[in-house]
Image (spheres, rainbow, N blue to C red):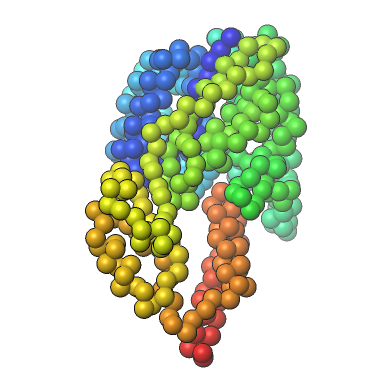
Length: 377
């Protein structure tokens, strides 16, 4: 029997909830000791920025050094908006650290790789795939993005089946991956579809377990695979998430025993305008990030401003002020909501930059249309 502690999507950033994220990672070290885990896996996006700061790297050295005293660590890189696509990726950021040079049990990779550990366990590492890694010999100049994604998806399938060809039945075979799985949800309105670069969940059969990073909600993929979920909340869009680490106990021939270990994550809360107006000072937590969102008539704005100024904690304004003769059409509201969902989807699929630019152009057109219609009325 082995126990594996999984974390993913840490998004360590000196400029965003740095101290809170450190506390979450301190919990990981404590859990590793309390549960006597056999391994800890980090399934991508440990850093938020492409180039980690000196402060972020210095903390990483401390964290990995302390954690590796408890258990071997397996790390992979994530998507290019954070760690990949330019130097340094997770490997070039971690390898120069003194702890790696001292041969501590820390294994990092930004490419597909197999690690056969002496503790009767094989790790199959599958970081986020990119064209530069998988299409070096392909002529893709005249192909559409959908055709290129289909080729990449097929190559992912080939890698996974290549992994499975190396299985040894007497060993635990563990997949550590960062990417999209077909049918899983990016958000409430959009799933991973056939036009994306994806992993087929049926190809996961045979692994003792698969630890996945990328989607922050921490959803179950199959009995033997799960998105770990993020370790800390990073903005208001994640206020309803329950950040955690994943403790998985494995025994050959038995179903995985999965426990979510919840972190002391940063708290976010969004008020409607009416909720904020009725909020008392003692209802507010100084350690929570707050915002107020909604639409308010211009003549009611002084009341809201007075309330904001009277509260003991800062409230981020995210409301729209409506002039007395303005009314938003249902069509425009729908268009703006759809645009927001698409932008969230693109943030999880960084190769879609052309679509992002088209959406920005569309947003500018909508803003111009709104301005003209308001002026005309």
